[in-house]
Image (tube, rainbow, N blue to C red; front, side):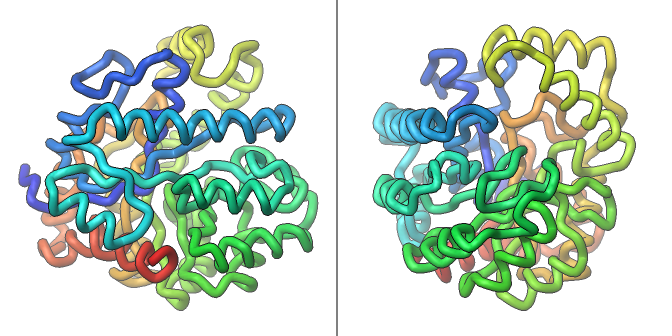
Length: 356
């Protein structure tokens, strides 16, 4: 495998995993984690959007506090490893970090519930370095419908439109992963920025509501946007999707905070008794190729969602494995120039066009 292709990855949940473990060590392999600095370097990851995720479903004011703590955690990680990590908020800062041999560290807030219905909070997140907001997570906000909740506002409310317009004004990416197709279209009707999905795959290949329908893919193409294809098996094939639906029902019944040691123990216990059906690097390549076919080569990128899932495809066990995907795509006649667009040029262009 060749590690020559540089990678910008759209979504990694390591900060929440570290928070739940009370840890900040990124120097070597830790059992149960997909991410550390040596494996990022092996995988060719030159820039990473760190998800400053907090669970939804509780009081939104609590989520606001937790997202600030998550941002603080990422800033502390960057401070702890100054020779390896560098904060980045623009495309130019990504390029400078990579040029200095450090991994550009960008922040993405996963779930609009952390705003607590406040544009002031959104502006504050921007000042702290956050450069994308995923409009919802697994549940609706008062102003936007999630892909995995019952429709409430039919896409975006009037305040949701204000949120999208403020994201445009600030130069932040409106992340369309996790939102319903109606919300995707409503956002694209309002937004003046390129469409952006931090970690989603193609609905034509796997009928999960989190995935991107073809009619939205054409709009991604038309806006000069990007879909960062995810590696999570639930979004790759139908057998895994059905298994994932059952896992989510089990997780919803676990009486412990997402990612806590007790949550992970019960989650892994169920998975051991009910293994996930097969998926592989070939499934991911199929989704990459579908996005390319419908939306064009310029519209596809990668958002692995490492440390945000307990199961991964065969051949993609952790952040060191991006070259395995590139090797699979080479067997499908992707050139190194094509691969560079997928892994680096496309997301960097959208970041430059939106955030500077």
